[in-house]
Figure: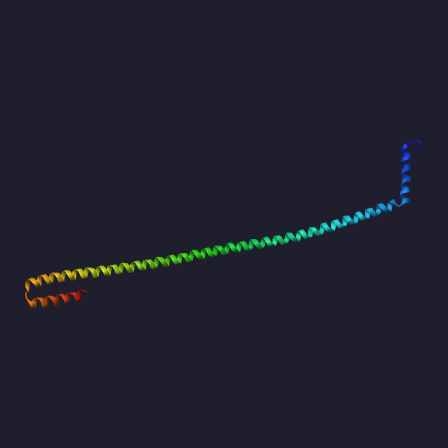
Amino acid sequence: MFTEPETWVAIAFVILMIVFGYLGVHRTVLTALDRRVERIKAELDDARRLKEEAAKLLGEYKARRASAEREAEEIISGAKAEAERIAAEAKTKMEDFVARRTKTAESKIALAEAQALADVRAAAANAAVAAASTILSQSVKGPVADDLVSKGIAEVRSKLN
């Protein structure tokens, strides 16, 4: 039995354990393990805290994003409404402009017709006066003729104009 190497390994192991126990190595190992456990717990607590902060930040960013999307939709809908209002206003202004231009054109046409009618009447009056003056000057002679011609001409002019 003492010739076997396993026996001597076992005896050396037992002696080593007794020396470690006497020197208090087990307390040092337990203290080191306890410190390591505390460090791991602290790291886990930090990790949990960081995870909660990250979740909180994620929620805040999601809320901001939703708010920004709502604001963008409001801006877009406002712009569409403004564009529709401007288009309707432009259409109304265009219709008013066309109506005014049409009315102005009709007024100008009516004025031109009246002017043309007045010009035709004046030309007819002048032609009638000239014809009457020629006929009367050939048929009636003397101062009576001149007086009649001038009275007739004045009367025709006043009635036609």
